[in-house]
Amino acid sequence: MSSDPWGRVDETGTVYVRTADGEKVVGSWQAGSPDEALAYFERKYEGLVVEIGLLEKRVRTTDLSSKDAMAAIGHLREQIDAHHAVGDLDALRVRLDKLVELVEKRREERKAQRARQSEEARQAKEALVVEAEELAQSDQWRAAGERLRALVDTWKGLPRLDRKSDDELWHRFSHARSAFSKRRKQHFAQLDAQREDARRIKEQLVAEAEALSGSTDWGPTAARYRDLMAQWKAAGRAQREHEEELWNRFRGAQDVFFAARSSVFAERDAEQAENLKLKEELAGEAEKLLPIKDLKAARAAFRAINERWEAIGHVPRDARPKVEGRMHAVERAIQEAEEAEWRRTNPEARARAEGLTGQLQAAVDKLKGQIEQARAQGNTAKAEKLERELEGRQALLDQALKGLQEFGG
Image (cartoon, rainbow, N blue to C red; front, top):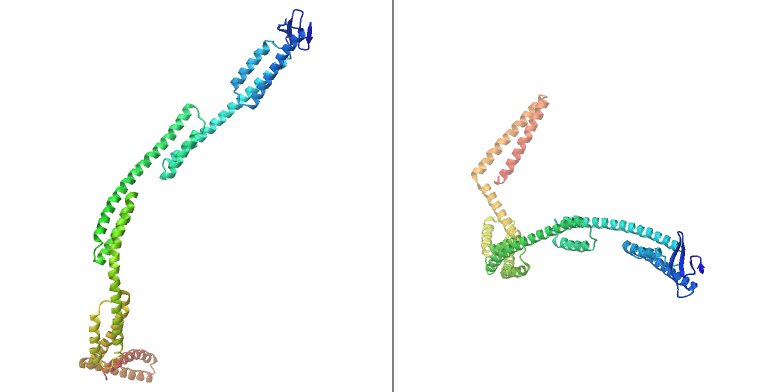
């Protein structure tokens, strides 16, 4: 009989293993010595030790599922319970029990992790839904559309939730995208309609602009072109493929008209510049009549100058007030001289002036006498009152005398 600490072989070749529950039959060995039998079953034990070690490592370091881990543990436990190996089988059972605890712990950790990931995914998807619903109301069509497409890619990268929750959130998300697409489609359909209206309006404006391009009615036509430009801006933009062509035609028609007008105005400006030079010379000639010494000769000379003035055409608008002002100044001087001559030679006016002067002189003399009498009587208050009245009458008298001088008196 042969034995070791964990097993023995009896005289019949039966191999036993020692356990906490007593000896258990491992098997029968007839082919060799008892030591060879023990060595064979010890190698089987060592194989179990290796398998358990590998399984422990896989549980600790890989993502081996709890189900697969428990199946492997069960298979090993069946081999240990079958007692087909010689060694410390109880120690192996302890290791498997601890491994079961580890697998359970890992399963709970994974369960908690999945729950955490699921909650994070739920929150992430809810945030995507909220953002999508906000974007559904946006009028920033390009930016919002690009952002919604990015949200779809983000959604696809998130884990699925339970079917009910995932379907509900996806329904809201999809509805928001559909609502945005519908609003965008309506917007661009309306924009297309507006651009078509703008195209029709601008075609009419172009037709009128081209019809006016040959006009020589410079002022009204230029004003009409300004009106057409205002209508052009108010019409909005046509489709891109039509806008540039219509604008080139519209601008081209204006250019034809304004180029012709500029040519005519250039000739007119040159002519008006020459007219200004001639009128400035006449204004200088008229100014030499001042001061007026011989009214009759000055009047005749100014009339002759004015006839030549009227024969000259227009001058530049900005220069007109100054040159005409010089002629008007000479004309006013002649008119004032005529008025002075009329007053001087008018007998009725002279008689009225002399009568008024005589009345005022008599009133002044009378007041002076009254003042002297009041002072002689010691009535100072009355004298001062009369003196104030005298000042007023004296001023009127001085004015009347000045007027009388104009009559040569």
